[in-house]
Length: 525
Image (cartoon, rainbow, N blue to C red; front, side, top):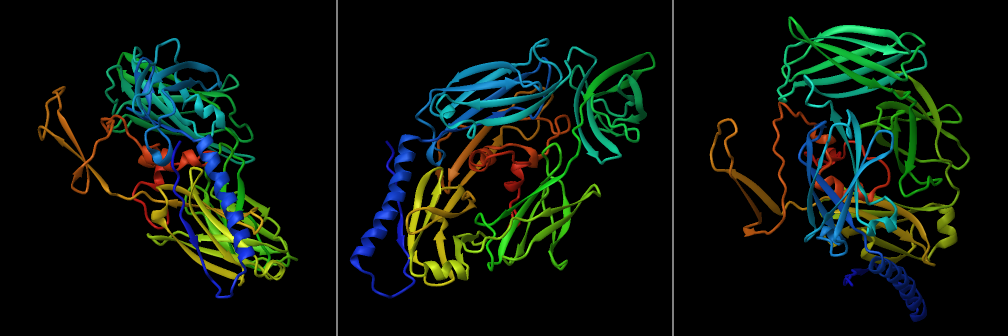
């Protein structure tokens, strides 16, 4: 099994002498915490898989080409599994196809032909995993939704997407369609007549022209008090004076019911401790929605203003009192308003706060309110830092002040999500915080082609060079080459090997625009 290195740091905040018995008891508690973590990591190591596709979306009769990367601790090639399973699931949650691919030195390649009849236009859910990963549920599975357009044996090949904005009385649908011919040439400057049907009735219609990329944007407003729940968008593209191509797209909008969740840093809102409270606002489709709002107490006093900064997420500070009720009054981007009661502050507590702006260290603060401090003064607490279930840092200190400061060097941890947990004197977890440790840019990858320019369908020879400083590095690579005029892509929306292995695989739930955090990162991200 793997050898796990632990860094034990003893933080001394007091010069008072400690008895040998207490020191032994403290060491026993800390040893128990680490030994349990070590045993769990060795008996139940985790695997992660990332799948690199050749394109962000496809058409029926295309072939999906992909390469998988299977890793384990510190994202090294996994030695546990020899087979990766890839499932394709349709929008009705039915399994369409399942393939298994042999893994050699942590990598595997495969393809999925999108056979007409088996595959139709729509969204397909790709799921990749190993049998070992089934022991942990689907938390570490790789997942991605891939749109599939119409078959290329038709006159037109299309890519379709839409988003819905809906209130109690009105509904607006913004649709985007890209048109290509059977040879995948974009259909620029083409006239398109369109209509929307719902309940066997035409509820909206219009006319437009595709842009230079063959893209047509359509804004659909439903009839007042008659929202579209199961409709169709029908387009007629004029190819010539005698030839018109018709395409049909399903519309099943989800009612935009906005909601907000609030997350006090460290887990609890504690009376008398100024805490940072994060929030996330989502619509009925589970996507982030921007907002602005105010925090008021039960006396009607406005204490704070806040605004979302990215896909409905943001934060604000609040110093709560135990005898007060706090309310967030929110105005969403679509104009709707709601009020949400914040979590009630607990009367006695201790919390962990982490600042992650220092490139070299995580700045830790342990806050205890006066009630908790009076009952636990002088008792020992433990800080444990881990990544992927492996403990890389452990420290102990006495609770001698209301606020305790510490620093943890970031080079103690591998890249990715670091979990900082505060344990009580008896070894019970009492507060927890996640922090992201950005990867070090020590490896440079360069691409060089044999010619500066090429003729149509001319063979391209490319050299890939990877170095750690001046030292060449061995590795397994995959490169996808597409025409960004014909296959436009939003880099923030993509799932990359960094966003998958270092971020989303360690978080439960859906992460919107995961590559946003790696695409030109700054302090705000």
